[in-house]
Every structure is written in structure tokens, then in C-alpha cells.
Image 1 (cartoon, rainbow, N blue to C red):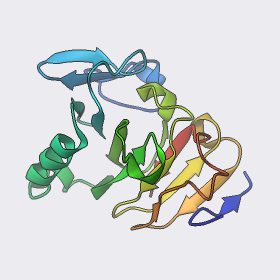
Image 2 (spheres, rainbow, N blue to C red; image 1 turned 90 degrees about the vertical axis):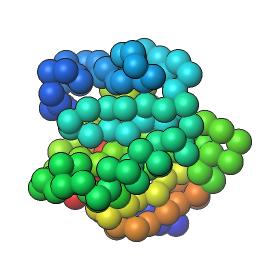
Image 3 (tube, rainbow, N blue to C red; image 1 turned 120 degrees about the horizontal axis):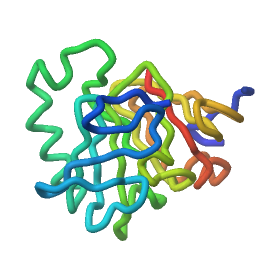
Image 4 (cartoon, helix red, strand yellow; image 1 turned 120 degrees about the vertical axis):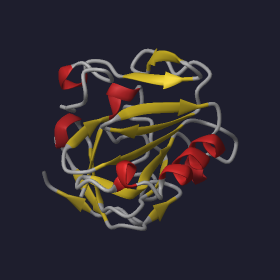
Amino acid sequence: MGALALAAGGVTATASTAQANGAWVIASFEGRKIDLSKSWGAAQACNVKRDGIVCFRTAQESDAQAARQAGTASAFGAQGYCSTPLRLYEHGHYNPNGGRVLSFYDSGYWQNLGDWGFNDQTSSFRTGSCATTFAEHNNGGGAQAYIGAWTNDPAMGSGWWNDRTSSIRLH
């Protein structure tokens, strides 16, 4: 199954970014707020951190913002942050023809992808500095796949996990 290995088996955020238990998530996009659980609008890439969610028109803008913050202690110095994100892509082969990308930096708890309008939408991924567990259902339910740090998969385990991931946990 490629980089994915099958195993048996709420988001807590600040009041300014999410309702308790992840019922909706508000992100900053070009100076206004958008509810990602309802629509991404013109946004194509979002960086999810417990201190706020910022979205961009392009993945390149998202990457540039992440690179600017990489050297700051406030961005990644605290325990529970990964220095480089897990990136989930809406399409296979890392979105060669466009599509949304969702980047996660926080570790230590389950994050439900439906909260960001991304449930069962992941078709390729790149882990960063943290290992990750993918789960079939919310809050880590159902089948799980543990993925090591610095792993890429352009086709989600040769199709088995394609558009089937509902929650993730960075370690």
C-alpha cells in the first residue's frame, strides 16, 4: 500500500478561530474571515495552527508565509508544533492542475478534516518534521495508518486511502 501502513483501530482551538469541538472553523483570508467548513471561496491553501488559521489564493503564497515564520520562536518554538507542516492535497500528485492544500503544524491531538471542509478529500500528502496518523473516521476512529516524518505519497497508498481520510494526528 505504498507509504501507508494499515492498522486496526475535537479539535480544541482558541475562541477566536474555532467553536469548541470543531463545529466550524474561521480563517483569515485577505483581511476578512471565512468559515472553512462552509466554503473556501477563492482560497486555495490554508495554514492551520492553534494560534490561528490563515488562507491564501495560492499554495506558493502559503509556502512563502510559512518560510517567513519558520525562523521565529513564537511560530514553532512551543512544544506541540512541527517545524514543517503536514500538507494534504485535494488531488493526486500534489495538485498538478490546481486544487486545495491544507497545511497542519500542531501536534498531539486529533484534528477532524471536515472542520476545514476537507473530509474525504485528501488524494496526496507530504509529511513534514512530524510523523502523522491518518484515520478513516473523526477523532481517530476506524482504520488508521501511521506515516513517518518526511514521507510523501502522490497517490494515497495506491488508491486505498484516496478520498477516505477524516482525521489526522501529528506526533
